[in-house]
Each structure stands twice: as structure tokens, then as C-alpha cells.
Length: 328
Image (tube, rainbow, N blue to C red; front, side):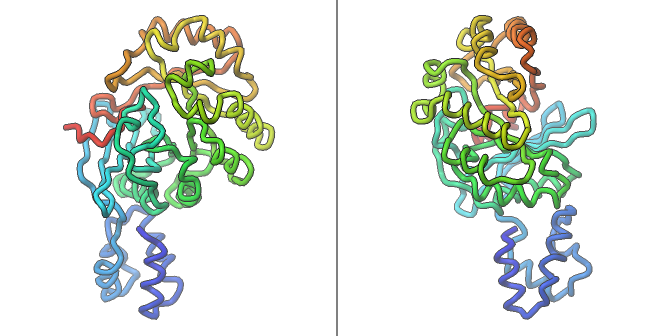
């Protein structure tokens, strides 16, 4: 919902200021539309239905995985594709993976989104409407900005949306913003964000050379500078940085590369999340044995490390697979 448009239309109609708060309260509680907002006069509900679209996105397709994960494909008003994912866990968590752009201009070689045509940044309303879509189905309590796009390239809209998520039941401490290392945005995030929103770094290689092969952004903003900024985040906020490391067979999964990664990371500052690769056409995923051996090296070095549970692979909803493909 475009809240600025809502406020403007209500003011034009001479409605009292509290009407906007009433509409928003119904919306974040999961109301399916204006017709459900029973403390608004019926003529006002009808007018809002005509004048203020209940969502800035239209749902084009939705699929549910065997493990309960749900992927939604939306379209913007111009028709640009946007995907978001709801992940359901056995412990009761309901986590959202949200997109900040339609496509991504940074073309990481292992990511399906990077192979798409980049369209544009999303507005904060378009980001928030991804979350609201799933909130209308069930309560949600976690969010990660790890969907389509580089959040630090659209930081103002991402932060505006993130700051509104507590109204949906997602606290700042349960919100994580990921980056491939876009330094201008990362520096702003470290300097300006006072809320306890978590930071994740999409790393995927222990050396500058290999990272530049996998992620062209490293040529512009070298890993050494990005890690310095992550350490500064820890020094200022006293919160660990999550490191995402996708496991690519024969590329970045050797034991010596695990040792190099352990040498690179301070266990007080970083926590590593090893991600089984979800094939998108260019690489093969590491074997379970290789992932276990890699983790053993990190464990021996006292680097906190976990292996991510893959969710939604059968509907192309898993990490790195979002490419606006409507899986059946």
C-alpha cells in the first residue's frame, strides 16, 4: 500500500488524521482489503477501494514447496517481475525473504537473479507489500533482505520498509539486510542505522582473486575494504556479522580454502553460514562430505559456522534461485 497516497486521499476527502492509522492497523494485522475495515464508514471504504490500490504489486503466480515454503511472483504496475518467499520452519518460525530490486545489476556468476535483466529499484511500499501479502495468510516473525537485488543500492527504500516491519510482528533484531559489499551503502548503513537490524555479508570466496571471478563487484570494492567496514559495524554495534558462503564444487570448497577463510575472519566478529548451492546452470553444488570437511576446519578454528537448511528448491525458491520463473 502506498501510504503517502493514502494520506493524501484521506486529506482531500477531509477525513480526520486518525483514519490513516486505522487503515494501517487493519493492513498490518492481515486484513484482506478495505471491506474488512469495519470501523471505517462504508462510503469511505468504497472510495479507498477505487482511489488507493490495496497493494502496489499484483500477484502473478504462487507456488508451494513440498517443505511448506511459498514463493510468490509479483508484477509492478509496469509489469516488472518481483519475487518473495515465505519459509516455514518446524519450530514455528515464519521467515520472509524480501526483494529490493527487480533483477540485479551486479551479475554474481552463481546467482540466477544476476542473469536476469535489471529493471529498477523497488519503492518502500513495493518492498513492504511483499511482506503484507504473506501476513494476510499467517503471522510472520523474521525477515531477510536476501531476495532479488542488492539492498545497499536501494538503501533508503529498504530501511524505510524495514522500519515498518515491527508493525507486522517482525522486530528489528529479527530483520537482516544482506550485501555483496557495495561500500557506499554499507558505510551509510554502519554510520546511520541506529536500530538493531542485523548485517549479512555475501562473501563466497576467501581470496580477492577468486571473489573477483565469482562477483564482479569485488573489482570495484575489494574484500579487504568490505571486511574493514564489517569490523567497524561490530565495533560500533557489538553485533556479529553473518557471512554467507555458497558452496561450489571444486571452486571454493577445498579444505585449504576453508583454512584461508578461517584466517580471514575474526570469530568475535563473524558467524559463517555455509549454503548448499542450488543449481542455476553454471556450477555444481559441493558434496555433503566436502561441506562437512569445510565446516570441520572452521570449527577447529573456533569460527562459528552452521550449514543452512535448504528450503523451496523444488519451486526455485531457494537461495540464489530467484529469477522470476513461475515454477508449477
